Structures are given as structure tokens and as C-alpha cells.
Image (cartoon, rainbow, N blue to C red; front, side, top):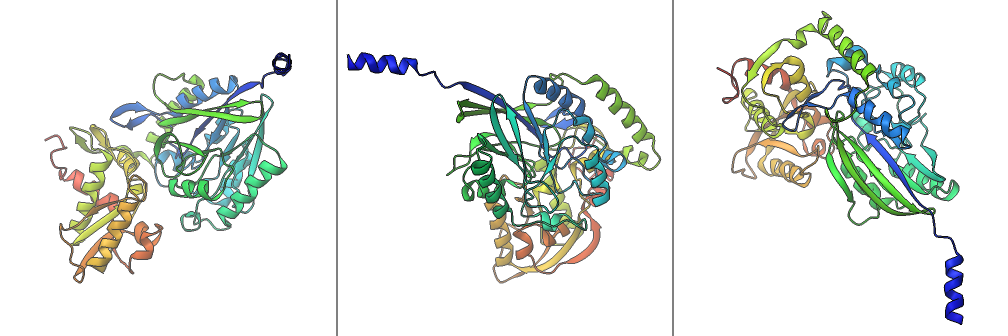
Amino acid sequence: MRKIALVLLLAAVPALARTRVVLLQFSDYHSHALPFYSEGKADQGGIARAIGYLERERRHGALVFSGGDMVNKGAPAWSDKYRCTEWPWFNGIVDAMALGNHDPDYGADVLAACREQLDYPILSANTLGYTASAIFDVKGLRIGVFALAGSDFPTLVRTPGFKFGDRLAAARETVHDLRNREHVDAVVLIGHESTEDDEALARSVPGIDLIFGSHSHRKAALHRIEGTGTWSLSPSQYLTYISRVEMTFDGHRLRDVTGELVRVDASLPVDKAVAERIASMEKDLENDPSYAPLFVTVTTLRVPMSVAELGARVVELMRAVSHADVALSTASSFRQPLPPGRLTVEELRASLPYDNQIVVATMRGDQVKRLMALSASRKGTDNEAFIAAPDVLEDGREYRVATTDYLARVAAGYRELFPKAEPTGMHVREEFRKSLSAGATGGHMKR
């Protein structure tokens, strides 16, 4: 009788409601409005497709976030001409955006004017003047999201007036507030810091359920960060992919996290009004005398050049033009493969978006080996380096080493190991453009 009574009692307790919440995130758009060549395929990405997909998912109840870096001064030309024009196109679609290091590229006043056009907040817990977090009520659940300025923001952001605090302290305070004061059901970081920073954060600050990757431009499927209970995935760059995560709750308890990367291509619905607007704006851009020279042909490639091949060729070129023994450049300097066929200056700028100057220094062999070991420790990240060096390095021998002003003066880890370097007056992208125009492409040019 006691067993029957217990069974009846348990049967009378209602089962916890199972609820699923969908979260979407894109990051590091960098003003890539039109489709482009990526991962061996033409016609990838495109903001009209992304907005069409996000609009549809938002109507079905999804939360939508931007990981930041919505512009990029200097390349592409679209960014310089139109700046934050697209940001308000996401009004009613995006729920919150992380402040990226490139978003202040055009100055504090321009960014302030951009913010005034938005109906969604820009978050950054450790940036003076920005809101740390936001809470969204979905299906009876409370989802808390926050953003951080990465550890490299103080060196990357040159705009006056920006001040960045301790990111770990800000994250601890924000997560504590969301968990213990706001009693949210899940905590999500939407950006904007490197993969290394994300992983260190998850290990140092418990209570973060999900980290949407950003800043490193990394493509990574959903996975648990080793040694933590935090899930993460990263959608690469330029709207090549959109991160999609489904959180399943039993009552108010998070039970499961699943996710995937959604490829942005012709299979997605297109916002026709945005597509028409983009086509008109691109025509105006290419006909603008200030930008028309960017759309002339540099060369014609018979076959594509992958990012790996591009990086290897460029550092060899750096070594040759600077008469150096060793040359190196971080992977972050090489963003896209070169497509086959007609190659314009603008497409070259898309692959090499930063106007890095070549600098040189004298280093001992053991110092060069430390740089190489640092690169090996960062394999698969933006901070891995492409290196051209002799097969054998002698510890006590001195070598002439060429690199970029970014690696020597800004890149964390490398700048601490690199001695004072002298500028050469040569810029990486221009030297490579000249080599392409001259036909020095190792069989990649049509003859």
C-alpha cells in the first residue's frame, strides 16, 4: 500500500515544462555587404541573405545577436564610403550587439551617431560608457547576455576617449549580477575577444553557459571548452556563417545545448528590398571617382590561392624585398583566399585588409626560435604566424628578421619578444600587388 501511495503521489506532480530557446549570432561582418569567394566557393555570404534568414528566425521567436566589428576602416571600400549604413537595417532583428575593436574606427563622434540610429543596445562590460549586459524574457525564461572588450583592445583601439577596464573583474561582476540578483536562467557572452581570451575566461569565471566566438574570425563547431561547463562555437567572418544554438530547459534548469553553423549562401531566403538597395549602392561605389581605381584589374589567376598559400607566398616576398634571413607575419593579416579569374585591387584588399608596413630587426637565432615556438603554441588561431626561415638556425648567430609593424608593435606575445625594429618604407600589400602585376605568382597567372 505504501508503494502504491508513493506512485500515486509522484503521478500527481506535474512534469517540469520542457522549453527550447533558439539563439543566433553573427560576428566580424566588417562591411562585407556583397557575396564573395570563400572556402573554395563563389557567391558566399551577403547581407541580404543574412537579413532574410534572421528575419525569418526572429519571427519564430529566436534571439539574435551581433558579435561586433561591423565596420573596418581602409578595407573594404564599402566601409569607407557607407560606414554604419547597414546597422539600422538590423533594427527589429538584432537584440544586442557587442562593441568590437573596429567599431570606433571612424572616431567617437561617428560611432555615437551610429548608436543613435539603433533600437538595440551595444554592450561592453569593461568599456567606459557602455552597458554591461541585457536580459531577454523568452517563453517564461530569462536569458542574460553580456559582452567584453578583449585584452588587446587597449593596443588595437586608437580612437581617443575609449577606456577599457579589467575584463576578468568585469566578467565576474556581471555574471554574479545576472545569476544572483537578476536570477537569469542562462548566461551568454556574445563577444568581442579572441579565442584564447574566451577559453581563459570560461576557466576563470564560472557560470557562463555559452560563449559565441568572435574577434579571432575562427570557424568552430559547437564544443565544450575543456575543463569547463561552458559551450562555445564561432561563425568565422564576414557573414560566411551564422551561429545557431538551441538551449533546452526543464523548468528553469538548462538541460541541453545543441548547435550548428548555418552557411550563408543562395539556399537562404533573401530580403529583396535589401538586395536591391545593395546593388544600387555598389554601383554608386564603383562609379565614385574616389573609389573607382580599386576596381581595376591587378592580374588574372588561373586557379585560386588559399589563405595558407597566400600567407606563405607573402612572407617569402617580405624576406626577399627586405633582404632578410627570416620573415614572419600573423595569420590575422590574411583574411580571404584569392579567387580564380580577374583579380581587382579591392579583392586583393579583402585578402590583405591591413596596410601593414615591413619593419626589420637584428635577432639572434635563439630569439627567432622563441618567436617560432610562440607561433606553434598558437596553432589554428589568428596569432599563429606564417614564417619563412632557414632550415637550421644557430642560437648565437645574428639574423636579419622582417615582419609587420603590427606584429612588432601590437600583437600580444610577439611584441614582447621582438626587439626595436626599423621601418623599411615598404608596405606588404603594395609589394604583393606589384609582384602579382609583374607575373611573379608561380604559375597562378594566365600567360
